[in-house]
Length: 271
Image (cartoon, rainbow, N blue to C red):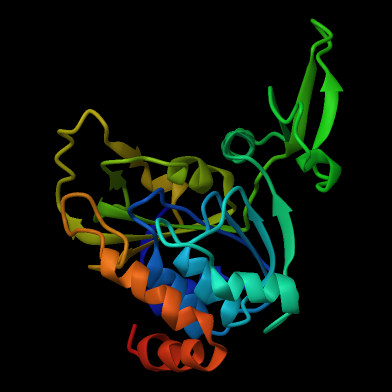
């Protein structure tokens, strides 16, 4: 059952060195505040999982939190490369980064399988592509009923999933509105979960047909973190800070500029 925590308490209790950590949120509701707290608490040797790693994961990688990245696309959306991720892969700074690359369809199916408690996911995909030749976690099997060749990959079962949402009630039930990615599946697949929210309310007022509710029994920790998705956006609360995404390209190109920005805005900033 969900409990209410401060952000520092939740990360200290539920995120450990060496964990497999999924921080999801598609276009909006990206859990920046929680990711920054992971950096402040100097977690190391993490396997980071995310369908679309962007600036937050660039920061985590550049600050030495990551050992491995499981992903299906990586970049600064609408701008270009992730320079800290790129330097980790190409030059091993601040440490080598192992990659496990998939397609979006594969990641979505892997989360679904993890949420269902299955060891792997089966789907139509990867035929005619080169990715299986460089990723040993992509296999092909024959359907026992039709003989059709299907792709198979390991399910995603994170040690901890971290997401941001609009609201939670005081019992820990969570409301997500707007564009929905794989947040629900990530939480259901994970052994532990942290949900940061814009506000904690008495009544979730379920009016949206596109609303997703995570019952309190699926969540470990709920944290009130207003603005916790910035510079991404939170539907109904604030817009995406497009200017920051462009600014990040220059900030992240140089190691020293990056480290100074992180010191001033993350590691020495109050959570």
